[in-house]
Length: 249
Ligand SMILES: Nc1ncnc2c1ncn2[C@@H]1O[C@H](COP(=O)(O)OP(=O)(O)O)[C@@H](O)[C@H]1O
Ligand SMILES: CC(C)(COP(=O)(O)O)[C@@H](O)C(=O)NCCC(=O)O
Ligand SMILES: [K+]
Image 1 (tube, rainbow, N blue to C red):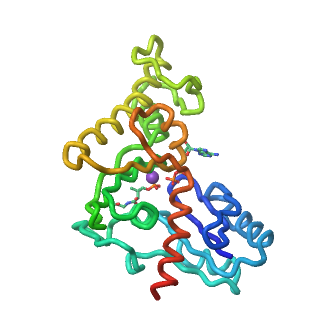
Image 2 (image 1 turned 180 degrees about the vertical axis):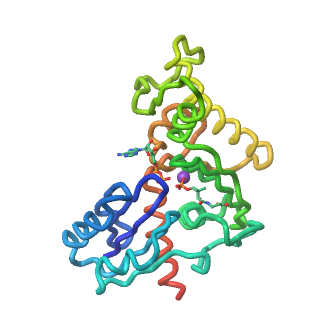
């Protein structure tokens, strides 16, 4: 039984897998990581291995301290990935982005793939049908946009995606300060993502789109393009990498 852990800049996400079967997902903030992870391990005594992808500043010792009996596999730039990395600065590429690219290759073989991860940042990662990772883009996530508008202006309030009315379209013309901010943030993100997809389509007429990240379910309803929306895609990709690396060791 495997515990997979994704340490992002906002949340830590975890999941327990038995082979390809996802048994449980768990989410917690960075602060109560140690306590919660011990709870997970106590609830799943059959966990023998853990695979960790961390963009945060946690080091391997934090995870080794959880349980000395568990084998910890820390995903690094030296991990065996199922793609050719054509990034010009391969050692600055986010481990999370590499895991997403690996998941796209392993779960959607032999086609052009664009992975969009809407979390702290919105990342775009492209792997072509020859399994070459070409790179992509890094943009402000939804929360960072709301926080920037508040922190870097004199009068704008701090809003959040949770305040957005649940209807699936955000009014284009905001008729109040709050609605203007929501229109700028939500429509800005939706139009940005659709704009990127349209530009990719000019270069690659055929490709699939995988949308993941904590804001993926919110955004999937608002995007016109056909996408595979899966908020657990990074966790599933970590499991796929574990199976791939142990098989190819
Ligand atoms: N229970 C939750 N707690 C915090 N953020 C959540 C939650 N559910 C969804 N979200 C959304 O997920 C975003 C973080 O997405 P995530 O992919 O976890 O980020 P990262 O991987 O960068 O840490 C938050 O900004 C928020 O909009
Ligand atoms: C862009 C990121 C901060 C995204 O992190 P996240 O939104 O998942 O918290 C992370 O992928 C990162 O630190 N990248 C390093 C720079 C690069 O990928 O080129
Ligand atoms: K992200």
